[in-house]
Amino acid sequence: MASGYTGERRTHLEALAEVLPHHGLVSRMVGNDDPVLWVWDPRTGRQTIIFATPSHRGWTFLWSPGGQGSVDELELTAAALRQALDMSQP
Image (cartoon, rainbow, N blue to C red; front, side, top):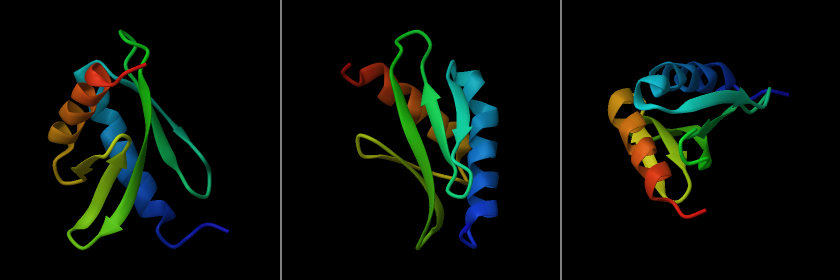
């Protein structure tokens, strides 16, 4: 059964997915009841999974290793993802 947040979570992840190509990144939504965004850099082959979760400031994107971004700052979040995928180790 999907949580009450599934629709809002999906909306935030889809909004992020729309700006990622402008930063050279590719993504795909995975998961049905608990959607996450699989993001990769086609140049490096490095990838991560993005979670959207409610927080005390609204909604936040989280990714490994230790990355986070605001749903209200999609361009900054996409730039941080790009940097994380450029710097991460294989």
